[in-house]
Amino acid sequence: MSIARTSARQSESSALSRLAWLDALRGIGAVAVVAEHMLPWVIPSLRPYWFNLGMYGVLVFFLVSGYIIPTSLERRGDVGGFWIGRVFRLYPLYLTVIALVMATSWWMPIRREVPRNSSSIAAHATMLQDVLGTGAAVDTMWTLAYEMVFYLLVTTLFVIGVHRRSGPIAIGFGAAAVVSGLLMAAAPITPGPWPSWLAFAIFFAGLACLISGRFRTVAAYVMGAGALALLVLSSRVPWFGLAILAVMFAGTAIQRWERREGPLWPVAVTAVLVALAPAWAIHAGWWWVRPGVWITTLVLAGATFGLAMTLRNRETFRFLAWLGMISYSLYLLHHPLLRYFVSLTGDLRSSPLAIQALMGTLFVGLVLVASWLTYRFVEIPMQRLGRHLATRRT
Image (cartoon, rainbow, N blue to C red; front, side, top):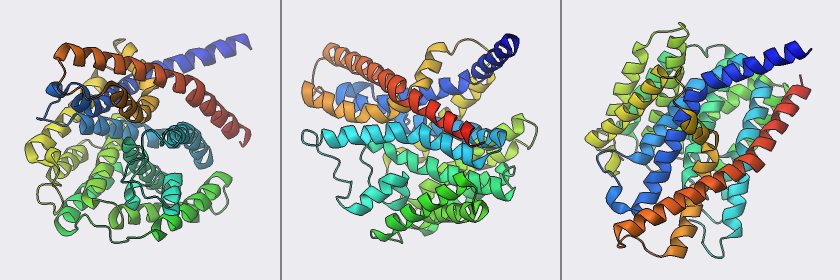
């Protein structure tokens, strides 16, 4: 028995070391997003404008999700267990941060973009705010909507047995991004509160079916089709959402290529389509989607992923891997903590560089400590509970 346990621990340790490069990429992505939000308020002279730090970090995150999430589902082979894991991975910290923001709203009001009505609660419950055209309680939570859409689509593809066609799917989303940019404006086609409540009902009823196994195929079809419809018809900027899905499925296609289950050329085609997506888009007013900045950001994100993949067998990722472990906490916590920090320090934008550097270092240290604490006392216990519940049901 002891030999078996030792072998299991060694196997787990080996698996973790093989995934350290993905944790390192998450760490890089989280630090980039933190820097994007911190620099304009604390050390504005260091913020780059030749590429977008925040979007660079987000694209790295999306490539990592695309690479690992479908593999996780396929390796598990259990849709219900997969979704239990996702729920206990995402929701505990997510709800904790929302509770923090609401508890301190007397001091730091919630963002004006967040509707003050019941449909906002429904949108937050599903994490689909951005594809429902609703502002999130914390600015960085917008990406979770696209993560959730990706999980739903991956589940649908797995249930119907076409999940291995990642390359063509990535190209399809890239082409759709270009077309929707040409034809569709930013205004949602499905305005009003009812999409949020409809999404709420379908999401949780479908989730119950996926976990219980009852009507699983029907639920997967309905949830996948609904997620895709929201992405195209209700999201704030349809071409952008479709481009994000193209990037995520490109990450999956890289994994297929690595496992010799598909070619690599669809990734290159997808990259070109995503690069072109905002070129003629009706809504492309952000500074970071101008061709030079947008393409540079895409290239840097892809190069970072490729370099980490090349160097993944080297033990050079320890600190970055630690950052990756706490990256979800770092990602969700830093924005509200930055607002509190700036409120206490006052406007630092015209302060001497030495003061700005000191305050920036102090803020990063505080965020790292806070993120480690929530990782240790919120994320880890809930993930363990999720694994326990997933094991008990099998």
